[in-house]
Length: 226
Image (cartoon, rainbow, N blue to C red):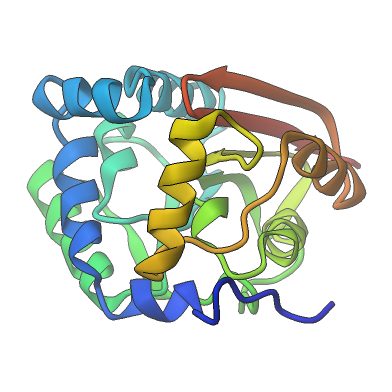
């Protein structure tokens, strides 16, 4: 499948260069009180859904399970990882600066992690390497979201979980304005509609797919077919 570029931009390269919005995103999502309020105003969404979802999915993992967090951003999901969790936790991102912030967050929380500079369209991980794959606030940032789903599903183990969130196209005027602005500054890719998201997850081998809206953010989850 050929790459899909939005408005002539390769959004992945914008994120690789650590666009100022990346620091703003980290500041918001890393602060549940003030950041949560900003998230609520800007996205009409409850930031707590992200943290509750991550906590719930992590809680059912067996000791020694492998987790991939891509894009890890500044390590926001590490808030939900217990310091003594017996996990292999791989934080991956296309941005070296994001990975630096994630490593600092992990050190501050006493959590052992691996970090990997990775392009979601060409993952270096093996088929079925991870029991749980997180991809929060993600698909709308990727130049080719369908290919990203295929790759993230590929590295999810049979019976494992693929969980994330995204902005979707086809929303009200306020959200369409957000897309136009994000495309103009190169931080958003082509995105997808709700129907496309469900179809792509299914065709990538995910079953029991769930889509849950929280304001402008849609959370998705599925189990990799055995």
